Every structure is written in C-alpha cells, then in structure tokens.
Image (cartoon, rainbow over all chains, first blue to last red):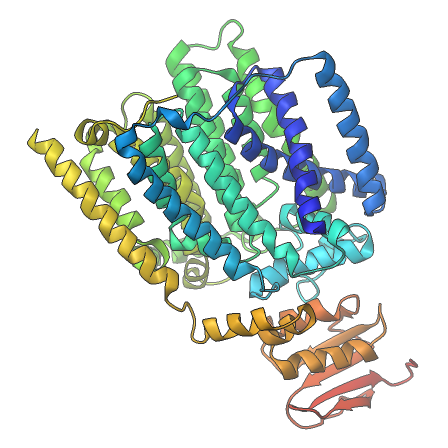
Length: 465
Length: 142
C-alpha cells in the first residue's frame, strides 16, 4: 500500500512538472503520453529533491519530503486554476478499423501477458543479483539509514561501496521509495516493472505521431517481448532506465525533426539531461543529440543568423541545467571513473585494445544471432538496414542515422580507451547491456524504415496522429 | 503488387517466428531451478524470502554477525572470492557496519577451520551449518 502511495506521489508530482513544461513550450499531447511522461519527470523530480536536500543539509525523512510535495502541489494547483493547462487529447480507440481489431487485440493480449509475467517474477523476489545489490541497493540502504548522502561518500573505496562515482538516479529513487515504505527491499523491486510499463506507454504514444495504430501496437509488442528488455525489468538495474530515457528522448528529437515543434525539442533535451543522472554512458547520447540538432539547424537554415541562436540555446538549456548539479558535485568531489581513467590512457593500451577488435566483433555477432536475449530483433534490424540501405541518409531519417552513428562510435571509442582490465572482460560483461541502451532507438529506426512499404503492402494500419 | 505480397508474407512469417521464440524463452527456465525458487519465494513470508535467495545457512550466518557486530563498527570478511556475490550480499546485509580492509574491529571468516588472525582473538563462532568465525581486534571491547 505504501509503495502504491510512493508511486502515486511520483506520478502526481510528475503530472504537475509535465503540465508546467507543456504549458511553457505549448506542447499538445495525448492522455497516455501525459501519464507516461509524468512518471519519468516525477522520478527525476524525486531524485533532484533528495539531491538538493542533501546539498542543503536537509535530512531525508518522509516529513521533509511531504512538506515540499504539498507546497509544490498547492502552488501548482493555484497556478493551473488561473492558467488553463495545455490541451490533452484523449485516446480514440474507435479510429481503428473494425476488421483490424482482432489483430490489435492479439498484440494487446501479448503485451499484457508479458507485463503480467514481469510482475509475477518480481512480486515475491527481494533484491538479489550482484550489481543490483552492489551498485544500487547498498547505496539506497546507506542513504536511507544515514538520512542523506554520507560525508565523503564519493571517496569511499571499492571495498566499501561499488563505483561510488556512478550517477545516483536509481539509488536516490529507491531511497525516496524507502521513505514511504520503510526499508523494504522486496517492494522496492516493483519500481522496475512500473518503469517498464511506463516505457511501453510512452513509446506507443510517441510512435503514434509517426505510424498508424496497428503499426505502433506491433512495434510496442515487438519491443515489450524482447527478452533482454523484460529481463532487465525484473531486476534493479539502471540500464533499463537509461534505455527508457534515451529512447524517449530520441523519439522526441525525431518528432522535432519532423514537425519543427519546439516543445518536442525541449522535452527531448530534458530527457537527455535526466539520462546523465542515470549512467555515465548517457554522455555519448547527449553529445549525439547536440550534434544532430546543430546539424539540423545548419541543414535547414544554412547559417545561425537571426533568432536561430536563441532556439539553439533554449533547446540545449534544459539538458545543461538538469545536468549541472550532478556534474558540479562530481567535479567538486573529484570522483574518478573506475573504468576509463583519462590520466592513465596510453597509446600502447589503446593499440592493445584495437588489436582485440576481433574479440569484440565475435561477442557482438553472438549477441546478434542469440535468440535467448534478443529473439530475432537484431537479425531483423540489420536485414531492414540492408533492405533500405538507399534510404538511410535521406530526408528526416538522415538525422536518426547520424545520431546512431555518433552514439555507436562513442561506445566503440569507450571500449578502445578502457584502462581498467582487458577488453575481453569489459566487452563480455557489458555488450548485452550496452546493446540494450540502443534497443528502443533501433526499434523505432527499423519500424520507420519499413513503414511506407508495410503500409502499402498491408493496407489499413490506422491513421497517423 | 508482387513486392507487396512478399512484404505481407514476410511480415506474417516474422510474426510467427517471433511469437514462437518469445513464448519459448518466456516460459523456459532461465536458470536451473528458477521455478522451484520462485515457488519457494511465493510460499515464504517476507522475512524468509531473503533466506531463499541467499541460502539458509549463509543468511543465518550473516544474521549472527549482524547481531554481534555493533552498528558503526568496521569489519573485514573473507572465506569467499573478492567482490563475489556472497561478499557483496554480506556487505549489504551488514551495513551500517562498514568494511575496512586495513584495521577492522572485526574479522569475519565464513567456512573452513578456525585460524585466528594475528592481533585478533576469537569473539564468537557459528556452528549451525557451514562453520563461521567472528574475531575481535585485541584491545577492543564490545
């Protein structure tokens, strides 16, 4: 019950944050999009609240949390009483053709079975897997029992806490839930299936801006049933969170590319900024986003004259503002990444890693052709890439191809400059997780490339919003 | 037209293959004994659920340590591989006692025979299943 209360508070806070953002940027969204996005924004608000409390020396207690929440909610309600919130569109199920409802129901049944299965696996299970305990649950326990982030925490040795330099989104989110539930590492697990469901909702809602109902449902069904994705919804791990945030951020970026709706760009920027709180790898995606937006301005306008600079600044600002507190603390505490230490990178080390590229490729092909984790997703993805190879750099998909190219190049560079251990160890332990980060974006990319042909072949797929 | 028919057929084949693989890996045990453990978890109450995944004896030993090590004390644990799942779980369960590899208040040994480290004396021992030992630094008082 107290867990449901915690989640409800996340959602309510998120709804107000979303309404403020949508009002400010004049963004019009569907009800499903609002509740999904709100959960993501609400989670960030909770994390940011605890982080700021820690900086201000306010103890993490339920009372202190609720005081802020009540003040924030009261102010938000007052604001929206006098200022009408942005328009919310309802979901219109009747738009789907009667003859296609059977197939649509099959997809929905598949997604429902999958979601229930995830809850069935998580419901009785305490936090138990290695990284869940070492990286996230222990930190959450420390923060909860200490009433804040202990002094000197970022300098704690590896023997006391694993990777104290890692971003704190998930441990702080868990701490926030503990404030409602008390220390209970059984119910806290349920946050992951919730995030998984929210992801599917957000993915569908944004996809509807590109595809018909049937095709969007098909995409969500394929995404939801990728074993690696739903497996990560059953354990406490920030890789799923990163996947959720960068996928949604990338989708909003594409909405902007298509419609030039500034609101989508700003939401995208917010989401990329939040991703920086989740995992260090988000830097690669944030850099790709900034590069793509700059390229889009250059290609569309040819120069940065006039108010273009204003648009660029306002689109980058949310990302920078959200990221600043975390990077300021990282800089202030002098935390060092345990896997890539810039001060110990040598040409010999990089050369040794380059020589091991065949190992990387071998492990990569094992993933691509391994149905246990990926079904036939990557086989399909690369098949569509080959099939539609002439379209990859044309029109709006050019931007997504550029985004993916930069992000993949970033991850590849990361492997090449790792300094902690041999590359086999790193690739072997991380490649399936790293591929997970790309799964939402690649699903959209694949479905986008195939959309016009499938629509022509199948016929009625429902209209595009 | 032919192209459209091929795409339609391909889509149907892909969906059938996808669904078959999905259902197969959905219900297949990910690890040996996964469903047995899941059944045990559903039958257990909240307190014993952790025992089910940690293993009864190991959990009892950690409980024994937790009962005997005061909050805020430091310890070093050995008897299993460094950064292994057992070590990580011990660290998690024993907090607010903290690991100190240089000069801990307690040394904890899980399994094997008693070997009193120099500068320490045996404080308590655990005898229920696999043997475990709790050594206290000489001069420390609890």
